[in-house]
Length: 399
Image 1 (tube, rainbow, N blue to C red):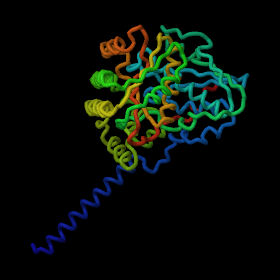
Image 2 (cartoon, rainbow, N blue to C red; image 1 turned 120 degrees about the vertical axis):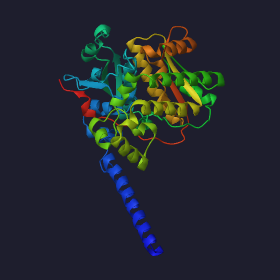
Image 3 (cartoon, rainbow, N blue to C red; image 1 turned 90 degrees about the vertical axis):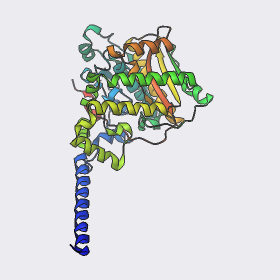
Image 4 (cartoon, rainbow, N blue to C red; image 1 turned 90 degrees about the horizontal axis):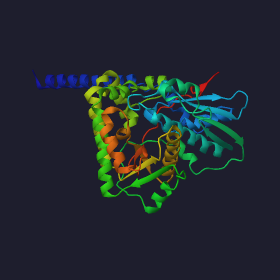
């Protein structure tokens, strides 16, 4: 074969390979849903709440943006028919994550994060919010799921007042969690004071640690918790079930996990989504466990500080209040240029986590208190995408 023919043959081969690669990439993008409008991001728009005339729904649309366990968004809202300035918050028992949160402690903290966002939005929009926790009494803990359906977490009463600009309001529209690496910059004593002083509840305490001894200890707990969780198949399966692989699924469900959770964005997001859709095993079994451990290791290795939120007791009201403080911590940290990520595995109460759970409480809550949150804190290296949010009307329960 002449050199000219060889060259021509090689050109044809390379052209075919190139064409196949282009087809493969285009196919991944189509499978990912690159041309789908991301309706699950609409609630993050600042003008989203303005579509609604009812001030209660406007405030609920802000609460929807708050941090919540497993991004389950487990909130139900009942509007008072007789009083247009009253609504009730219920924990949505159909959105429990019972494997990692068997006693619904995290679920209650998630109710608190919502209430604090409602309160801050109320100030900004000109509504004073009076929040009464468990207005119809405590849950029946022996029949918790059914009790959640009938007893509200909170009654919220609005009073029209003059709008009061909140320094935290604008930061509600930023992602609440950043799982990427952080800069090694430590907090100044003034910044620590600003963060710790947001708590004015005598039943709660918030402590920030960045000294070497405590950092090593808390790093160890974070990794121990991640390693245990990665090895508990029924817990990992719970997370796998609510993973949304592509834009079609994200628009359909609008809650749970997606590749954005690890900070993946842009073209890489669609490539990953296409691959995970084609090969679901990439996000299940050992692959998912290994990825989770590696992600936690990356987080731990680039954490300059930790924050702990501790309550004196562990009743339902205290759990809710810890979530309210957590929302204030997130927004105040954003205002100071910091981001955060909860590393909650070691605080979870399923049997396999019993030993490290007891150990971290001996070290940091030896007076009998309960650690509600363990959070890494630092200045971000990169921004991360916003996560899925449901349509606000999906939260409204019609009697």
